[in-house]
Length: 291
Image (cartoon, rainbow, N blue to C red; front, side, top):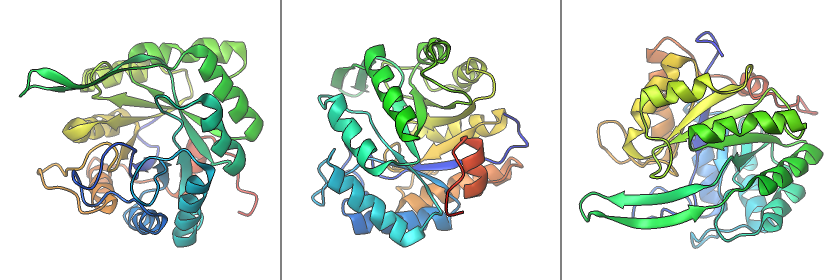
C-alpha cells in the first residue's frame, strides 16, 4: 500500500452490543439503517459493516433481518456502498452464521482470525465488567473461508493481535485463502493488542505482501489510530459500533458525524477518500455485473 492510494472509509453502522441508552443515534430498524447509510454516503463512506438487529434493537443472526436491513440500505443509496456482514459471535453456531451468507451473498464478510480473552475493564471499579473467551479456532476459520470461496464473498480478516496476522500465512499456503488479502487490525479490546501507533505499524509490517489493510480503533483511541493509519498508508473504519464520540468529546449525532470527521482527517493529511469503484479495486472485489 502507498500514501498515494485513496483511503477506503468504512463505517460499522451499529454493532450488536451497544444500545440507545448509551447512544441515541444507534439504528435499530431497517429504515433507520437506510437513513444512516444515506448519511454515510453523503459524507464520503464507501463500505458499511453490518450487524443485524431486530426492530427492538436486540441482535439477530436471522436471514430475514439481514435481508431487510440490506434492502433498506440499497433502497436508499443503491450501489454506493460495499456491503459487509459480520460473522463474529459468541454462542452462535457456524452454520447459523453461514446461513445468511449463503442466502444473501454480501460483497464482503468479516472473519475473526483467532481466539482471545475478550474483556472490558473498569479502572474506576478496578475490575473487569465483561470477561469472556472469544473462540475462533482454525477449523472454524477454514469452514468460513471454504464457504466464502464457494460463494464469491471477499473475507475481511479482523486481527485483534499480532499473532492473528501471523495466522494468515499458513492459510494462504494451504490454498484456502487467496491473495490479495483485505486485513483490518482491531485495536483497543482488552485481551488484544494495545492501541498504539507503534503496534499498528508492527501489524502492518507483518501482513502478506500486496494486502490492503486498515485500522479499527475501539473507543476514544480510535482517532489517534485513524491518524496513524492515514500516515502509514492504510485505510480506516469508524462508526457507532466502535466509538460514540468525536475527537472533542462530543457524542456523535449519527454515523455521518463520524464519517465526516474521518474524511476531514483524510484530507488534512493530504490523502483523499476512495470512490466506491476505487474501493472495490483496493479490496480486490469482483467487478459488478451491472456496472
